[in-house]
Image (cartoon, rainbow, N blue to C red):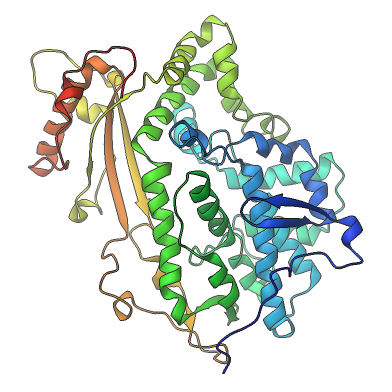
Length: 473
């Protein structure tokens, strides 16, 4: 009894009387998506259309050619899934939860607008570039999204209820460190839908995991539909059927796998390191970092900045142009090697720097400089750092039940991971002729730190001995 609920896959579609006011687009992931009139007022602005010129995966398309989809597609997809999620809750618990039209509109807008503050080239802009030009920067794209939304409302005279607008912004930053006090305290479950600060299960991940996997040509056997169809609100929190435990685990595992194989691919990181160096060198001339506080200027920043650097003849941009040219010609920073930080060292691990590698070089021969080396400290987790996110998720036995409970992974399988985080240290030589020297210094660093070489294998001999000859591997 209560083992299965029928759901209407078109719950977020317009009614017959509204159809003339709505528009629809066909998405390659979700099929037909219907856009409501208020959402269209935001979509049909230059600030939102800018998302078409921001690739969802930044520079990953240099390695995965199909990864050219944009933040625009993703944002529309999250809008659609957010609408589906709350419509399903309304269909099954609408009277109990008092879900009204305003709630539906608010959640959909939060999904649509959650990324309007994103910078060029995905997370590279705020995590790699800004900290180098503005030491100690705490700027985040989520906070800029809030400023951008206010700017869009003012600039285009969008008629939106102030209470609705406030909740939209609260929902966008609900999972960030700067999450605001939630206005809709009697409906806290609404904040679990777009950016879930409670446990990380949200429609933002549902969309990008499936969309990114498809664009990169990777298989994806995570089925977000199962979670949308079986979720239930208990005590103001979205909970999931106990039998879907492994589906939830697959969400976090698939996300971690995408980080390892796509987002932090060794070649992708090499290209990102080069582009960040180019952007840092160009900043004094282009003043890119000066745009980050004023949404009326910030919306003009997009991925075309790489073409601006590449085609501008200014002497001040020569070093940056040369780096972009190296990327185009596949003359990349050379990957020397990597190691995964031992599990017992994770807690007190300190990020490795180029200086650490230089200081590990033995005397004699070529003297390395910090500017010869690039280091990437890659952190991959299941969204909760070293903690297991499934420990913060509540489940229920069946739809007739109103009791929620956590589930220990030991109750499900002994094959589930004992550790929830990887830290990978990668070292690159900026000059191909220094690969052998940098590789040896990196090995010395590992011996000094751990008393052994933590890397799985040595740097290939052909790479160590290689003299630059035009098209690096």
